[in-house]
Length: 78
Image (cartoon, rainbow, N blue to C red; front, side, top):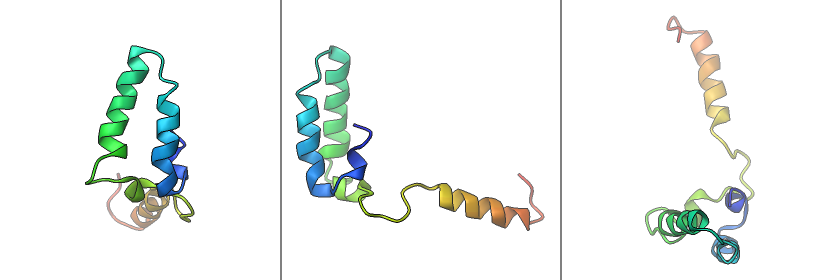
């Protein structure tokens, strides 16, 4: 499930539903239900909003690195 964001947005729901067929415990079924409601079928945050397929920057580490660099020149030290 952690690899779903690396798929093209249109491929995420079918891949997710393939994985849901393998949920064979109550805990996995609860996780599948949560992911389905919050990430797969959520109209406010659809897979196209969180897919990182073919994006050059996939994490916020670049932003954090730039902030650290900026703060090194600042009088503020965190």
